[in-house]
Amino acid sequence: MLLAERGLTPTAARVRVLQQLLAADSAVTHQQLQQSAERGANPFDKVTLYRVLEWLVDQGLVHSVTGQDRVRHFSLIGSHHAHAHFECLNCGRLFCLQGLPALSDLGVPTGFVQEQFEITVRGRCADCALVPLAT
Amino acid sequence: MLLAERGLTPTAARVRVLQQLLAADSAVTHQQLQQSAERGANPFDKVTLYRVLEWLVDQGLVHSVTGQDRVRHFSLIGSHHAHAHFECLNCGRLFCLQGLPALSDLGVPTGFVQEQFEITVRGRCADCALVPLAT
DNA sequence: CCGCCAATGCAACCTGGTTGCATTGGCGGG
DNA sequence: CCCGCCAATGCAACCAGGTTGCATTGGCGG
Image (cartoon, rainbow over all chains, first blue to last red; front, top):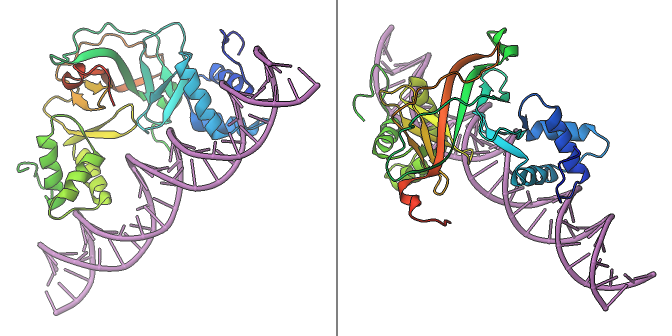
């Protein structure tokens, strides 16, 4: 929540969101962020949160992933620019994986220009692997 | 629109949706399906469409992919069970790619159970590659 | 002919996300 | 010191994709 500034304005909301993202062990949804924002002393608007997140993404500090639930999850971008994700089919949490496997030819048709790609692994996270049936 | 029946009830709506999916060159959104449904003689309800799609997915005939726009796109499942997708960053269309590259170790943490995975390539489709700037 | 069930339609509803507009607070210029 | 400007925020209305509850219908077996 400190060094994120490189000529950028650190506002209360931005700092708090960054803190939460730092503390999270998985990618967080807007909803989660807002809930803990509301628990705090000065809760801020959901619109502010959206704008902060949008701003963070624009700054390249955060990226967003959309899970099967069609909800965006946000997480800090570490040093690794490209990485895969793991989505738990049970609890819905999204984690960033570290190692990126070597990808060979993806079979993109002629004329198509490939700019980025994304790999999502689905299954059960460590917590949910033990509980076969869920909510 | 014919052989889709293996003890399953082919209704007008189902057949029409299947026809459209067959005719499509990319994965189609619910919206597109409904629009062309409305142009037809007997337009059907959006709920019916959702239910038909849900049913098709359950039958294993169709699968759905969610793009960056958080909208589901539906496409028929061919013989290939696992395949990658291409999402055009310009027009938003989603295509199914054929070849699935060999994936080595994905770096899933211990305790995590991998069940499926998904690869999405993003860039510009052949149509949009020619038009640098877009809508 | 009757009752049942799957398929459908309709309308209300839910949620994630966006937009327009007014307010506020800091800051540089006059 | 006062003024005007702009970024950040808040509020409320709004939008779209998707879901749910409930009534209707049509076919089919009994």
